[in-house]
Length: 311
Image (cartoon, rainbow, N blue to C red; front, side, top):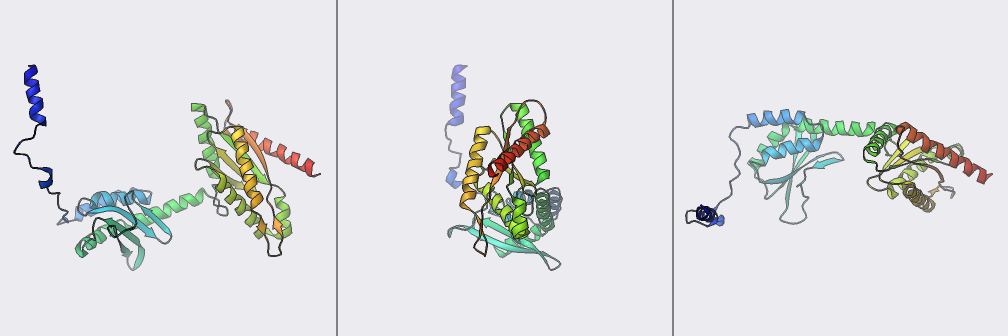
């Protein structure tokens, strides 16, 4: 029996004369389907179920990749652009990207970019254009939906996340700590004497101060951190996997950045930004609102200390 197994194993791995060498096996040729009606309907229904443009593009790519030698797709509308994983902008002569305009009733819906192994023929481009027309509205609507979703969670002045987004993220971070025991830090902050800036120089200068402060936050935070504008001059930062010492380091970096960046007015005056902080680590017991109250209380204690020093 042992000899039989050895013989059978050897027969499976040894080459035979009837096998074609790999170099003689030709890849399957890309051929356009004779009738694309079923493909178009299936693609349109799949695209309508997608809520983000990348998913719509992937639905299109998965279907046309069978018939065309494409490597990636992109969609561009106004300032928005999204692309599949393998879409590569042309950086050399071997890379080919072609753009086709998609319209409906003379309304421009955007451009579809095709990254392919070679330039597609007129017939191939025409077939792909006709197929892509069926999902053009789905692409456009998914972009509008994602933009509306982003606007609903973003402060329009500073482009930081807003209070609604803060409440959701705070609950997630507290639940993560409760389950895994990994501490996070919440930093509440506001701008010192911000009301006097508005009263002295006007709200347009106050807006410039808020936007500069938000820019400083985004400059010094890590990619995993979250910054929020709660309203007025009140801000919060969530620092995952960070203790109070790490949060203090973050506030020191922000203070250093703000010291180097001041608002310069046409009159030659300079407005420096100064901030008060309140730091609270996640702790067992309580809920996310208790966590926020501890950070808020620490902030007001810090502001009172600043006022005593100024007096």
